[in-house]
Length: 112
Image (cartoon, rainbow, N blue to C red; front, side, top):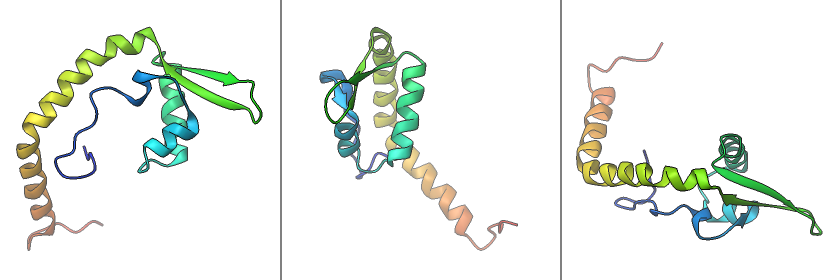
């Protein structure tokens, strides 16, 4: 799992936790994600009841996303997972280096 800059960890609270956000706000807040990927992720989260999508009758028409009560129940286990990853990051990085070294080593298997 890559989190961007070395040592940087994601916020414990999702962007939507604080207030509803429009798609364009979310897109600007996550510069590493493509519009297509963000759209697909938001649709999956909406389908699973994690977020709510509201069509605003503004001009131009806009869409706003917010969390649902179900999202609030998901937060504690996600927090535990983020804490575990943060604690284990040195071992994770070590495993990545070892894996990459084996791929690049003299006995590395070449893809077909």
